[in-house]
Image (cartoon, rainbow over all chains, first blue to last red; front, top):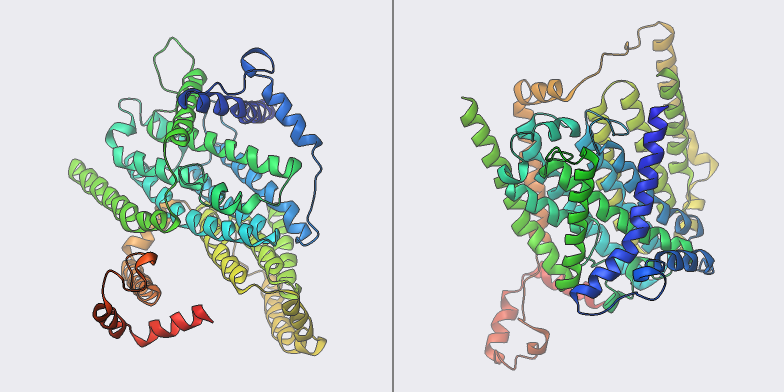
Length: 315
Length: 200
């Protein structure tokens, strides 16, 4: 019975966070860019969330006649489902985890690698050249950055000796991995931005050249699923960064574990938004080149050095 | 656990059959993804979570995405589906069906004799890695060499020689004609062919 409550609680909190991020992102962007942002509906413009959601629900749910209908409908569901599945392994506090798998990190990587299907299929099924271009960019970007994402976490896994996320958090009792694995943290975060295709790496949708790329044919709640999926992805990468590198629920005693987890995750979500507010978008080939020529060697060096230091300390 | 095993087996078999019979390539590939996911569930229910997750990461998450990528670039339309339909005549099925029937016979004999592999205790990552990096370390390294050779080859074939620093300088305003001719001489035959293909 407790399991059901945990599942429902996590789902409730996540969906609310994802919806609330609509307001948070627009307000924070406005603040950093010296504007006002949404400030009319309700106190501080908070009701903009409700208005946006209602608008999405009541828009005409249009499927283009030239689209591949079945795949067009499935694609937006895949992104939300795969991101929500990843949250299954994340420990929010001691005891508050849906399934504490002993292959937690790998499960997270598997689910995020399935997320690429939503972009590829959505773009292909739209049967539109801009969507197809966006889908192809998205596929190559996400496949490339998945590699570094997995490898950048391996340093932490080597130091813990376990793929289980609760073990990883427990191993950070004395010192957080952000101090012992700084390179891994930076590389994971860069790969995370590329995986969630957020600005500055929103090359699959880059609205100024591809008019929203893979989801330009989507409207109504199907577009809303992509939207929610993106915010859930931001939350997921922030939560994973906190779990792997910033001690998860650990923190001084005066606040409970879940509160620390929430505060840290929120700080990273704000960092995501700050990146969007401040950085320009690189060109597509620059992104791929920096990925394969800079990040991959760095990630391998990180693993090599971690292994060498571990062996030295052991023997 | 055995009920989960049978459910995912049925899903795997149905999905694989649909892979073969689907006329549209992308739909077939999607069924292939479902089939891989079902096989990974089978591994999970047999107590091999590591192999199960690798199946999802590598096959469903990377290899099939690349296949879909290629199919997307080929831009197969209605004609391809029609052609597939023509190829899948009943008489095409005879050969494969006989071969599959032989396999089915073998399997049922094995099952009836009761020699089927008993469900092993869970195989954890430590055991897999110990076996891989102790007994089969040479095989692992050889596979690494092979993959490296493949990557180097692909990088070589895909490499584009940069002829112009910028598209505004294409007409040789900055470099002068002599320079341009030299650049042209250095182009290898393979690259010329590629250029032609792009232009066509």
